[in-house]
Image (cartoon, rainbow, N blue to C red; front, side, top):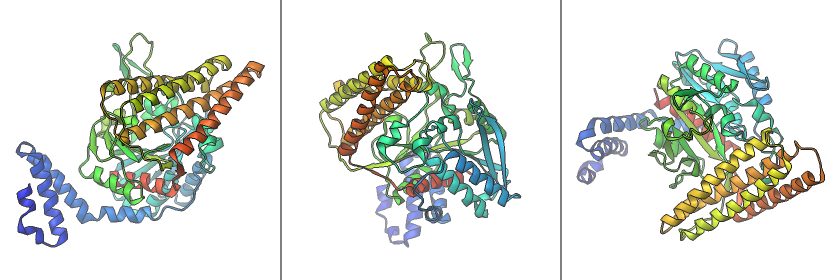
Length: 481
């Protein structure tokens, strides 16, 4: 390849040089045994260059409003319903099911193209950025006929409205780390619609029986989407993306989409996807379900099931999860000796032990918040063990990896303390319960303040996060054809 790179044809006009360089780099770097697939990758990149997809994505990103509050689920549904009333020949609103508590699950369909794109909001109810993204994206595709050329778009504004209701006290107000976690709720894994698709368990197939998950599965089977996008957001770190499979040219476009918003993807894998296949900078492949689900057959049921992307694969669907952070951090972590990770593991273990003790003292074990807190504490235990193991096995910890560990510590300690506070509110207000709740409130406040100081956190503009999610969906729809 270097021989070609030094050839006089480099003096060609810039666009021709870029075209040939893309083709030859993809083909020759792949080696002769995979020349065809490498060449096809290069051709796809060339097609993207010629089509101006990047420029179009930048233009659409510039149309996102400057609003800084995400809509509530009720406001979002009302807005989508209003769009359907204004465009009756183009848009259709319908109900596809109900939640466990009887809340309706709505879908807005835009266009009548044979090939379907499904966009899912609120896959986790503590991740509300997708509500704003759906509001923007639904209006955009209704306004732009070129986005509906042979394609229909289908928007499920919230797949877990019950969980969203338990987060409603903080999700559509100015971002605040303490308030967000004081009124925080994220269900236990076995109660999350996106992670409870049927999964093999022993000699049987385990079904979780969540009506939200069953409605989502029925919708996937009805639409047979060629693209499904599930809109996620995190607390800290860099944006990243999870895809069901590789699509030529997509990883580069996703990295560019994030970079244009001043949110470049990171070199280190975020904690959620460590060890997963790398499809490109900041883009990770969803592993097979058998590599993910805990196989403890002494339990009556798995802790969680298959993911939406596993289920949709029966239709050849490209499933994409754009994950965007709500806070920017200003602290830079340097490469450190492994003791730094060991110290962090010990600190997180101590914080989790205190929350667990107070939870056992003051909360009923079967309440919705207690179940969620216990589930998150179990995740904490797993992460603490993995950090100790890595500290024993490595010579140095890269700064980017140490940063991700700090983000995980903050996330887990604030989530568990916040949900434990809410769990105690389900108990009679005895002196012991009130004392435990006051201690948890103090822990939560102090840890939020400490995190803000140590990480130097600042909120990221909502419009930037919406632009990343929306443009990721548009890029997937353009390239998966």
